[in-house]
Image (cartoon, rainbow, N blue to C red; front, side, top):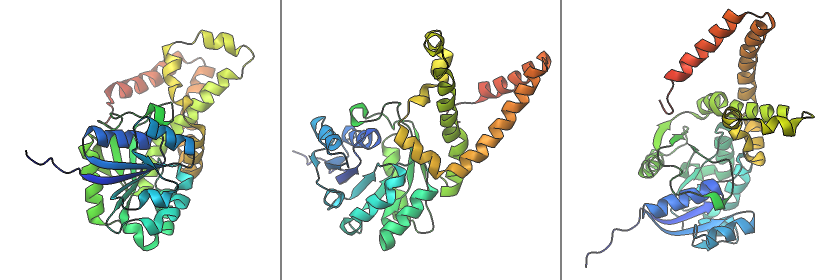
Length: 294
């Protein structure tokens, strides 16, 4: 009998057994590319639930134990917790391991990683898979979450080329489309196309939900309101950290949005139907040409 091909990853440590970390583990399982998966979460209940669901094979008592012997480490914690989590596991990380995160901001994450890991920073590659769901938690983990999604790697001068190549190949093996940006460029871009849109969705839903006749208004809402506010159901703690970490870039994008909104308000206030239609037509044409991932 022919010997089976060994797994690409012998031991995966998932630090943060939620939607993103759980989906990564399931994706590797589906690809038959992992041997054993060890999980750790600050919430013991989350890690135990991950084991019950078969997302991880065992639960570690702490982060250092989880990463001991792991050749691949996925850090899936709130971005504000990056430094603390990496410091807790630093001495247990194998010199040849690859450690990645999945955070939505990168300048702060890369700075925290450099501070926490010291000379072991060469094991770390910043990664941001642009994927997710409205509902958090390992119960919603999905082996296909990263299939076809864009993953941005954010190397710095301290990033080891071999680790970067491994990270690129690993995400591609899960069906992701991989690109590379510097941390600051990543944060500026994501402020425009992700972080500010979330802030606007939170505000738009709240503006309706706090009115005296909110139940009546919401009962009349259709697919447009549903689609526009879908991302307002995001995880509050996650988005708190993202918005605070990238606040300068988000505020810059908010100023741009406010100027666009003011232009439309002025046209409406003047009753200028031609200007209103022209502004709508311009946006409509641009949106019609745009394609996801294009």
